[in-house]
Image 1 (cartoon, rainbow, N blue to C red):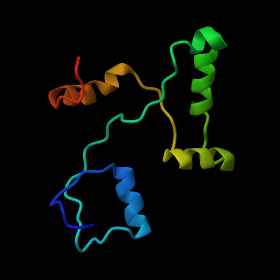
Image 2 (image 1 turned 135 degrees about the vertical axis):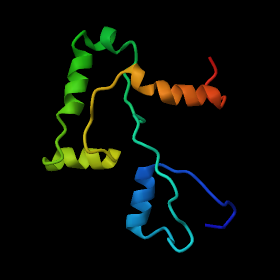
Image 3 (image 1 turned 180 degrees about the vertical axis):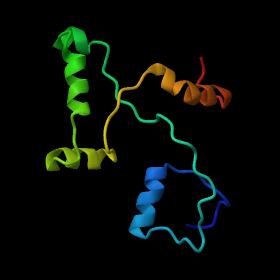
Image 4 (image 1 turned 180 degrees about the horizontal axis):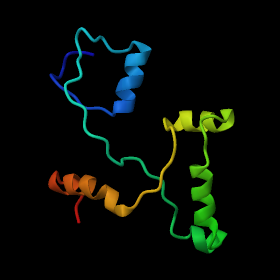
Length: 110
């Protein structure tokens, strides 16, 4: 921390892990706001996946992610690597707010 900026933004998971590691000098850095929860990470399949692997492939991939259970050591290892506790179903509508902000800031151009 060079003191170059007065404020910054980072992922909550990263913030919590840095605090747990003791990597944050809380005498110099403080949390001032936490954004409400939103859908941010998602997994997608290439459009050719169904043609290549069959019509039931999407369901098989989804089922594999949804069945990951942190009570099972092998599953927990995978979830920990991804910083996740579980996977849930989502839809395009859940990303409308992110798309709107991206458009307003010029990060998404339609």
